[in-house]
Length: 263
Image 1 (tube, one colour):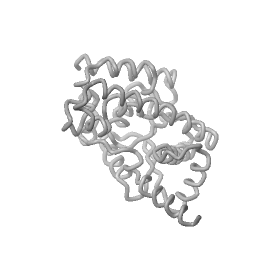
Image 2: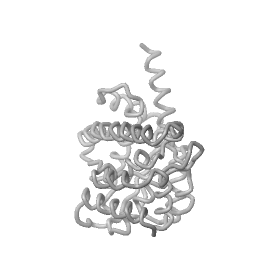
Image 3: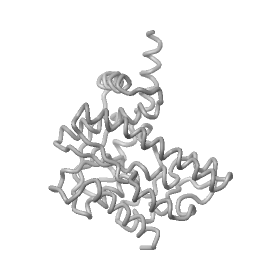
């Protein structure tokens, strides 16, 4: 394992230990799971640390995340629970979430809806803590926006990184409050900890993105995933955001459009 991968692995294990404490009874730590490289790497790391993660996947029946998560975990064999989102439940949930959030930000609403479903699934399988891999895309240039500003230089990239981290932290404060009040489930973000952020920021930019035409990005994360035994189909897959992978984005736009048309 190269030094950059070791830096990230050490920071990841330290941050996971920081939010979860001592090793718990196997199978009682939930993990929001899409099958993408971020959540799959975190699942493998947690498993090797002895936490025995319970994988939790939500999405509409025909969504990318539902199908891809199953495919990836078929190679790992971890405990996995899936909750299909139905059209009937979505309207009720969207009403509840949009009413509870004091924001018109579409991304916040989409993510809050997704984590509301994840929390309900966690509660149904008697898990009261769920960790996420949120933070990797912000810190390792996972979003396409980093590619679009690459030619403006490192200062512009780090400015965008700071903006995205700030948004993610504030968004998850709102999500955690709403989810905890609704379900008694704690959503924990080890990869937004100060320790992990500092480690990620210490690495050269080339470990994250190499140019405006870099479609994969997150290179050190993908190398670490390969070393840790993450299935190849996961660590070679391009980014697909939660709201798109679950089809929540498309359904929420339709819901909001229908709601406005009734006014």
